[in-house]
Length: 159
Image (tube, rainbow, N blue to C red; front, side, top):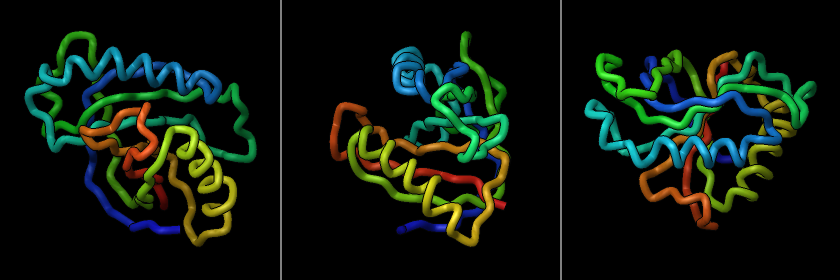
């Protein structure tokens, strides 16, 4: 599987969040994106052009996760500071550290299949150990969930 190991500093995010389960993730993520994306111009201190789709788990154990497992879902963008947060948006700090970054290209259904293979097969058989920090996807400005040829990056926190 193609990946890079990347070390980052803290990533500051402004966005919207919701408490979802794996069962409600698709609909909930779409709702968050429709709430957040039209307001991008209100964020004056944005860094880069990527959007972030973030999952903040209480603990991540693929063996005990079910369709009802709850987590905090965020849609947001990276910013230079948290001094100016638009009304009805919130901030999140993704703690810096090591991440495995996997390139992905394909449809949303292909993404789900890739994500499951990555977490159920590849990671347990790798030399890496998950860290309890948010997982996220970096989505280019051209991202559209209806396209079958989307390109994105999957960021997995490791120790």
